[in-house]
Amino acid sequence: MNRRKAIKNLGLSLGTISLTPAVLSLLQSCQNDLDWNPVFFDSNQIKFISEITNLIIPSSEEVPGSNELNLIRFIDLYISNVKNNDDHIFIQSSLVSFIENYYIKSKKNSLINYEIEELDEILKYFFKSDVLKQELWVSDFNNSKNSILDGSIESSSNDALSFYFLKTIRDLTITAFKGSEYIGKNTFSL
Image (cartoon, rainbow, N blue to C red; front, side, top):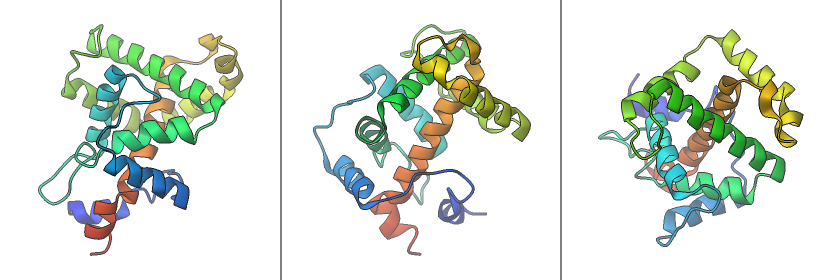
């Protein structure tokens, strides 16, 4: 299957958000704002998460990827402006767990010196795991939502929180990609 066909089918089997007029407006503003500054994530987290989104939707000769389309801007603003306070807590807690997981698996202790190959291996671990393992992570996360909200996240595994974080970022990346003006005009219309 060529990349264009894959892009057209992207998201059909993944849970993504609805592209309401407000969400599309937010996406458009992200693509046009030259003076953008992160709102929800800090600058080190933005760079790190941007690399994750670029692994999810990389560039090719035919189609620009996440970084060229500035999808990280939409993700940051969407989480900040559309997600509720509980979601903010879940995303921050799961980000912290994912970073800890990254440190353990990569034997690093900073987001500044990450390696793309290591991030790619971690993404493969979570997204290419068997369905039963993924369902267990989702169940573990759902069962520990109250403990996450009250700050006692011991009951949830690092993998469950990491999977929640990556799944959230993947879903938002795909939504932003599909809603991008460039992709809408140049890819889906063909």
